[in-house]
Image 1: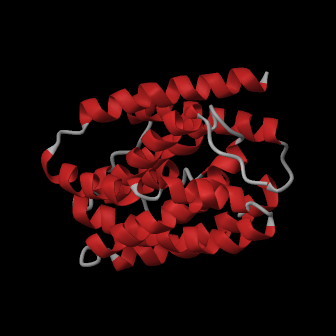
Image 2: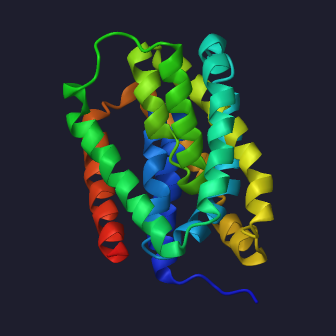
Image 3: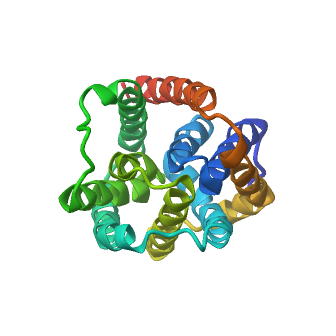
Amino acid sequence: MLSLPELPFFITAIPAIIVTGLGKGGMGSALGMIAVPLMSLSMPPVQAAAILLPLLLVMDGFAIWGWRRHVDWRVLKIIIFPGLLGIFLGLAVFASLSEKAIKGMVGIIAIVFCLNQWFGHYFHSPHKPGTLAGIFWSIISGFTSFGIHSGGPPLSVYMLPLKLKKEFLAGTMAIFFGILNLVKCPAYAALGQFTTNNLLLSSLLLPFCPLGVWLGMKMVKTVPTDFFYNALYICLFLTGLKLLVGFF
C-alpha cells in the first residue's frame, strides 16, 4: 500500500538531494556524506539509502557526461576493483544489522568524518599516498558506500593528497561511484529495498538531481568552498550526534 510522504520527508530529503548533486557536479564527493544521515532524521536509514540509490544513478549519469574528458585512468585502475570488493563486504555486514545498529553506525561515520576533516591534517603524511593506500581506502569506500552511500570521505583520504586538478578529481570519482552504484542495484533489489513506495518517493525527488549537479558544475569554477564546506561539516556533525544519541 502506497503512503504519501509527510512534510519532514521533504524538509530533509530535498536539501540532501541538492547537496549530493553539488558534490556530483564537482564540489567534492564528500558532500554526499550528508544525504543518508540527514534523511535518517525522518525515516529509517535503510529506506533513505534505498530511495537515494536510483537518484544517485541519475546524478552519476549527468556527472560522468559532464566530466567525461577529465578522467585519470591510471588512478581509476588502482581503486575500482578494491571498491567493488568493499561493496560485497558491505552487503555481507549491513544485511545482518538491525535498524538501530545501522543508525548508530551512520552517526559514528558522520562524526568521525567531521573530526577527520577538522583535525586530520595533524596526522596526514605530506607525501603522496601509494598504491596500497589506494587499495585500502577504496575498499573502505566501497563498504561505506554500500550501506549509507558515504564512500566519498574514505576515498578522499587517498585522492586529495594526489593533488589532481579539480576537473580530473571530479571525473575520476564520477566514474568510480557510477560503477559502484550500478553494482549496488542488484544487491538492494535482493534485499527487498526497491519497493513501489520507495521508488515513488525517488521519483518525487528526481527533478532536484539535475539541478544539484548543474549548480555543482557551475560552483566548482567560481565559488570559494571553505565556508560552504565548514557549514556543512557542522550540520553533519550535529546530525551524527542526534543519530548516535538515538542509538543509546
